[in-house]
Amino acid sequence: MTNIVQNAEAVLERLVDPILGVDFKTAKMIRAVDLQADGMLNVTLRLGYPARVEGGKRAAEAEAALSAAGIKAVVKVEQEIIAHKVQGTLKVLPGVKNIIAVASGKGGVGKSTVAANLALALMHEGANVGILDADIYGPSQPTMLGVHEAPDSKDGKTMEPVESLGLQVNSIGFLVKEDDPMIWRGPMAAGALQQLLKLTNWRDLDYLVVDMPPGTGDIQLTLAQTVPVTGALMVTTPQDIALIDAKKGLRMFQKVGVPILGIVENMSVFVCPCCGKATPIFGEGGADNMSREYGVPVLGRLPIDPNVRQAADAGIPRVAQAPESASAQIFREMALRAAGAVALLGKDYSAKMPPVRPLERK
Image 1 (cartoon, rainbow, N blue to C red):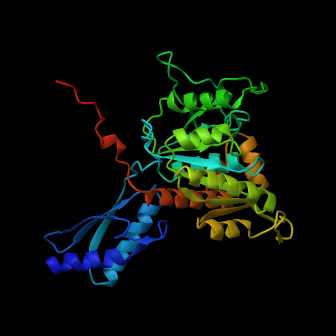
Image 2: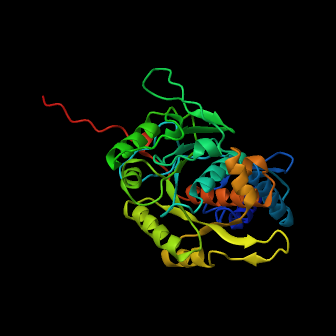
Image 3: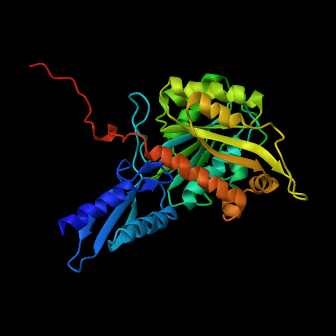
């Protein structure tokens, strides 16, 4: 009987999770292998990333591998998204397990569109997700997510996130008129970001996606140094001028100890709707070159798709509007790769550490 369990464990340990890119043993996915009286094995696997779709796939793969080895088993998959280590001595934010910063070196590369669809994709895959619009000078998420109401405050001090399309949302755009310019100096804008982040009562989020402003100025540095960021995702186009600035943003996060989850290449190619010819309008190979130079993966390549733009302008991003469309599928695959990169990071132990107090003199 013991041999059956050991053989099953050996089979499972050799399987590779395609989202994580490592075997089940390295990923610590095998939670239990129990032999029943009738000779059937009950196997429990744990996924550290959203498992609504992928859970069934991992279970089927495990059962097939065990069956091929002559072992009858029923495989159950559990989702357990934990809080992961953040930079320096910072502690994980209450109500938020992981913060994913979506950044770019320059504007106009589609960062906000990627952030909105990334958040929705993570939610559709089974996670509790929020999004913070940190672009103080040009908030886009109220329009993209189709919500413009001001956040409620129950105590006059903190804010309740606004609900939209299943996401918890907050943005400076909820607090000012759409055409009011934010004529603030850097420190004031950075302070507003801190308040939006820390005075919002986020409720049990697996991921908080932060839509960063472009560049590497005060707000970006404040976020990178004082906010517990789990990992950052860089958005660029293949164009050299965009890549130059994206590299600067990537290096900024690296210097303050924030892991880079990967690169998203937006507007990678245009496919003619009439003849089907693919044209790399902004060049090609940029994200791959950046990936090789800095040793970070390319999470996804998004073609120029008018439907994505139209959906964002209409206040219902493509992942929510047409979740089975080709572009939505790319966003969902990208989101899973980002969540997989987070799952491989070290576990956060700051919440378990007792506070340090000075000894009283006798």
